[in-house]
Image 1 (spheres, rainbow, N blue to C red):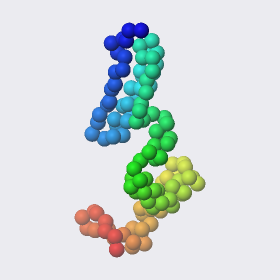
Image 2: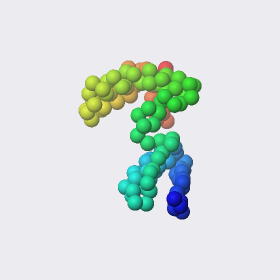
Image 3: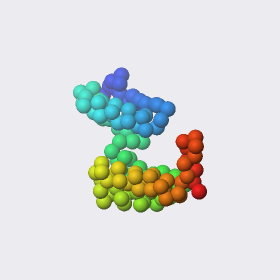
Image 4: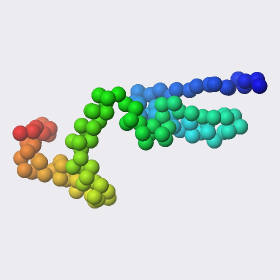
Length: 118
C-alpha cells in the first residue's frame, strides 16, 4: 500500500510558556481528529487527556517531591475551597489568607505600599 505524502507527519507547537504549547497541541489534535478522511490517527505522545489526568506519575522523582510539598503547603486553602467552591467562598478565603494577617500584624504594611513579614 503506497504511503500518502502526509503519512507519519509530526507537529510540535512551541511557546514561551509550556502551558500555551500544551493548549495549542490539544487544540491541534482535536481539530485534526475531526478530519478522519485526511488523518487516520492523531496522537499526542506527551500530552492529551491521559497525561492531563495521570501526568504526575511520569514526572521525575524530584519534581514529584516538589509538587507534593507545594500541595501540602496549600492544603488549608484547598480544603477551604473544597468546602465552599463558590465565588463567595473564594472571596472569604482570600480575605482570611490575605487581609487577616495584615490586620493582626503578622504582615506589616510598608510606606511604599509593599508588605513585609514580621
